[in-house]
Image (cartoon, rainbow, N blue to C red):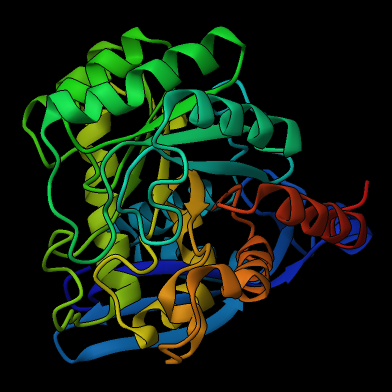
Length: 361
């Protein structure tokens, strides 16, 4: 495989609804991640020292080409092909045949769009209940802002902010995710009833995080971030942002599996806005389907992020709702299973319409 370079598969020519089902039945398409969408062709990418070469062909032709090469080429493409088509198991008890929402619940004074609004535990709990009622499958509770330039928060302070909220919501039957990069916070949040760990550092910020997640049989969202919140937007650079992010997440999935975690307990997030320029974010959104090759669920967070303002510094986060929904629906068109959003009710309405048109059964 060295002569060809590192190989990747990106599903393209995507189908949904009755067209997808008919094409699968006719053998002209494959199910995408076992969900309601399908793909007829793939882009084969070969990344070497001289750059990346790209071809498009039906998956069966690519698989036949790979078998002709044999060895590592055949093994690599067989794994990617199997990951693209395999049905995803339920994540934290949530079936993945249709897309779902992570509802953002920041109990921080300094988050970029809603800092301070839910700092009071009672207000945060009430808002978390509302998010669930409005259609969030998972409520994502965070006590440390990771906006660009944000400062770290001590573990005890982060726990003081999040634990009462996690405990109360979990007791009410809400599926709770803890948005933290600190193993101490993760452990105490799991004790309080959290079901998912959402780590912007993909369990790399602290050495104890990976073993904790494995030992506690946690479901985990592994996100890509270049740098840290204080440095990530200072001239981020990549050789190829899509393939670099894929390689990083592939490595983190492998590390989790090596630690004994089932792949079905993992979800990946390409980290839109975390150490990326506007061009990087757009490139990732345009190529999201490649991440199905990791064999996990995919979460995408675009809600209210600054790249949606298109360079307009005078557009506040709350004014980016329409752009957030548009970018989110684009992600759904690539087959992602989760969107992380602030505006749950209106996004849920948009997804319901999208589902009725795109993946109606």
